[in-house]
Image (cartoon, rainbow, N blue to C red; front, side, top):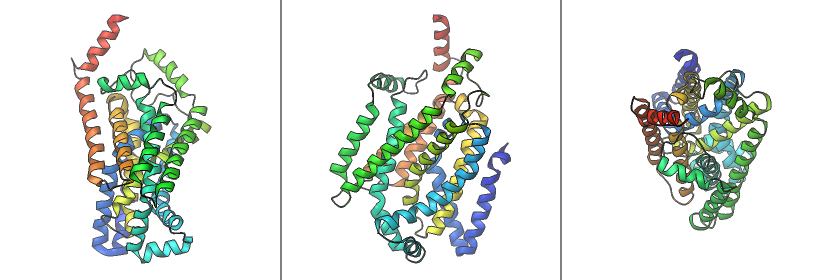
Length: 365
């Protein structure tokens, strides 16, 4: 099971380390290893959220996620995208931007940091919309009931997530962005909101798995199932838009890691290899969570991941005006996930809160 799920990750790790060694010797090899660990630590919450979406996709589309998806994640977001951002913001041609990335690392880093407020606005708004849509949704289980239940109640107000996200963007553009970035920050943030609404809306338009989930619950009397059910999987257009949603989600998570990687190395090749290796493990962890049914067994893990997304979105919005250290964003995400995992384990024990809730519901029927 481990080798079948992580086999490609192990192979990419070996290939990446070998390539780094031939590219820059032992120093490059060590930098790649550090960057891979950085990517995994910053993006573990991404894997948990990905798993929630991936479990609704057929095995065929899960394989697409691991093949074509990883190519987009590694080469697109970790290598091509940063160069494209520099080319656009610096008004350079593609060849000039590549030459800058390969031959003048310090200038390339400076260009990337100059563009970061726009990147943070786009990614921050996309992740904030994701978090708000989730937190305003009615659900049967609550990790933090004193907070999640009231938020779910006020979430009945239509388009509340859009109102809050738009207000946050207006505030960030007014008080956090400087004069040189203000208009671009507002445009980028608006695009982040539009992309989320469009991709999420298209996915819901074609996704019929909610109806199938209800059938599964009726057949199983609402009992949690280990792994995805044989019925509740998306195929065709629904799976395609879910796949597209995952790729945009991964892009939003990767922004922070790409910028933070410059604190370790300014070489774009080293950064691409290191973050690419880390991204591969995030993909494998995602599939592992799906195949093991971890989200069903530890029901608050998803809650912790979404709260981590909310924290990351806030950090990205703040970083429009001032840098937020990577250890804060990574530490918040990891801390929330670990706390939700511990809560899940505790409440699964005999006499735990979750068992008490189930007994109470049974007695009231």
